[in-house]
Length: 432
Image (cartoon, rainbow, N blue to C red; front, top):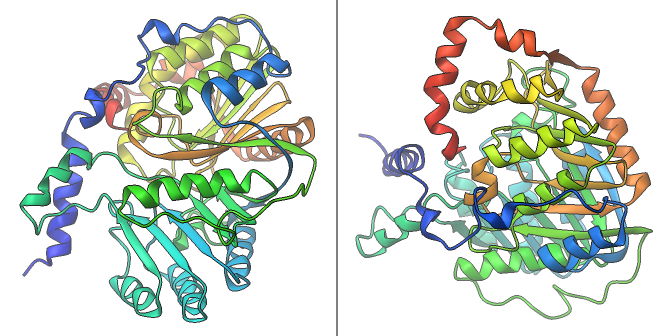
């Protein structure tokens, strides 16, 4: 007999894969709205750009932060687990992927141990993204005292709650870990063995995560609390969650939230503003690069005014067959305009990084696709600092050394079978 969880998983997949975006009725800005007509005026180094991103679009920019870049699982997971094991006052943790395996087991043990030690521990796991979780993880954590919410779980067992189908397409894609309200982590990594290792084989994905201390940690905490309340949890407040945070480093940063409920707090608007502000270079790393027509136009306009635009995407290793099929169909005009696209070769490429003019960097959970821009809850760290941007540019250059350039001639001469697959996948671009 098929397990009920498998049935629920299939129903969730069917809704996500086949329905039109449920959030289309939410009153928010669209790429073809006049609100998106952004002119190229001030650069990212200007005070006006900071004011726009910090006041018009997102939370205020906080000074005094330290951000440590962690590359691949060998650096990421030990740092996260060490922070959890040292927690004394609180743990808040939100993730899209939490799958069965060695990494999932380590996190389960660490979270359960701290909860048994009396540390309030709160976990949000996206229900759809973590269908591959070992159910014993949830049972063991709950038994230890961990409070767990499954984000937008499909209520197949309760006809009354089937109204929640209206929200089934909205997932939390955020990756947030905050310990004692003082140490934060965010980036692209999920809790699964695929992210272990050092991108040294096709089984070990390439990704980047960030360890944060300083005032911006409170903004990461706020993003978690927002979703904790949405899932029915109690308000988390007080010194255990929001302690006074003194300066820890030299960086100006903000934790920028994206949600389909917001119009101005929209990550696509922020990305588009940065692209239109570019005067020298745009470096973009994206696991799922399926931009809408307005964003394609913005990138082309940047290239036409002399901005060097380089984009790294996955190559033959791609965990999304639909994105792999649909994305190249969009590349023709970009390549013709001089945008450089590179395909990462060694393994699945899961990074989400934007660097503009060597002065502004946006890193976090957001992919360059419709789902991240309009369907998912996301969070990015925006950092206004030449040294941090230079570090991300160096990492980009290292990734570039492991990538193969895809030219306009390559695009024009691709086999007719690939062209047919690209064409057939185009209707699904709205879903990814």
